[in-house]
Image (cartoon, rainbow over all chains, first blue to last red; front, top):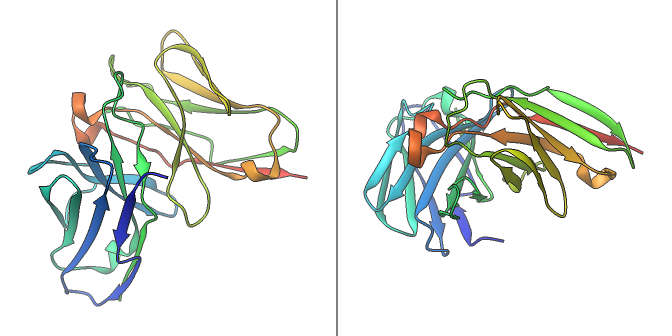
Length: 115
Length: 113
């Protein structure tokens, strides 16, 4: 399996508190992604990074910010958590294969509950 | 935007061939089509990728018609361990931006003994 870890794996927090999720990779892949997965919605992209300090917003970026200060770490921050952000969050990584960057490798996920 | 549409669920008996179709009417010229498998409590896992015609690997085949507005994942002789959710992915953020990357809602395949 690709070397991707996510921390924490589970978190319960209260509405209005800041939350930071961490994704760490040991594969030296250029591209990193944050997704959320909710029943009935499948996987939706929050943000993606195409290099250190280079990020772009995905389909559901409102309420989230990201940072990537080094290749191996991609942080997702909820500045003020809301109950609608209760979800399972997946980090993924990928590299250019010569045809596409969409052969992504996923982390184990973080289950976040906002009360 | 290259949104995708898949059937919500499918059932199949063990040993049968299963075909799951994904519609992506607005696929961009340079987009590849990628399929993933996801088991409960795990992240998705890459299965196969293609651009046009047919691609085959050790676990699946991918059929893409000339207009590329749909694709079909074919799983030969499924077993109980193939019970999972299957997603198709189109859109390449490196080429058309992150807001054009869509996984869709997936197809829940249940294999029956």
